[in-house]
Image: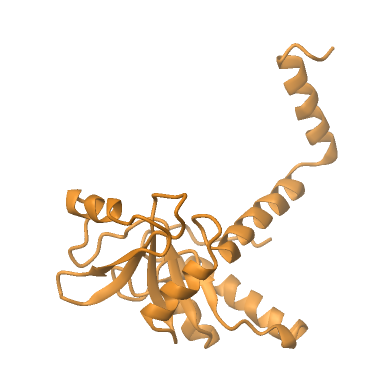
Length: 189
């Protein structure tokens, strides 16, 4: 649990969150040196960023670990937009593993759109963070997907929310809220 003091500013997520992520990686390396990560999947962008250097790039450079940006939404940069053409390209992704490139107006390849699993029609936006090529990044992310979100990111989200829920709710509050729900449903006192 960390106290974030910097406000959220679109495009500057790294300045808010990366110091805590770097600290977590350093703590892991000190406490469990045998568990050095081979690659970090980051819930955010890498090169697919207004300044070409998103949170995955920032974290990768500071830790010198390979990093991959895995975003749930398209950042509209370098002429990329969520227009009808983009929606049509998404509809063309028929099964898990299907992709199409995100090439900006500059002609630069910024990332790849990935249908991570057949059961989800909502794609992921994969971009290079640090020390990994785009093709490898896409293959690694796809290989980690049982559902739409890659398991390392999905499990981190599930476990952090559970931790926060347990920390913020005292046992009395949990019992009280449960009793209140029963009362509201006409099942309690």
